[in-house]
Length: 114
Image 1 (cartoon, rainbow, N blue to C red):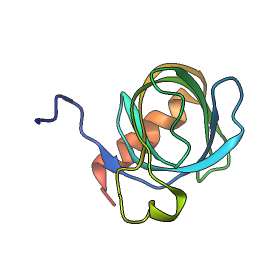
Image 2 (image 1 turned 30 degrees about the horizontal axis):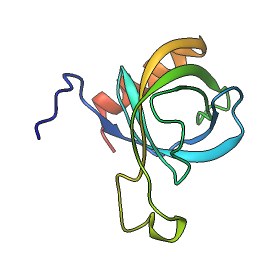
Image 3 (image 1 turned 120 degrees about the vertical axis):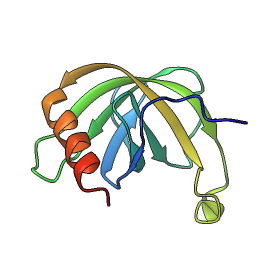
């Protein structure tokens, strides 16, 4: 199956909080792009729903956004390290705050990929 995304994804591990109505669960990003992000988590039950995301940035100012869950890969908690793509694939639908910070992170990753 080919990858249909046109935007480049950059590996980046940032702590996030997420949930369907409020950011309650803690997880980490696996990669970021201009249009979305991958969240490594065993909490993958909100399939094709909306989710609220709060990203902790290195500068300390959070990025808050809404995203649509595009896909989910569920695994038992003890197996998450064996499956690198266990989690949620999210498409950003709107920024609530911190869009400039998010875009700045993406720009820096494009210049100096980790």
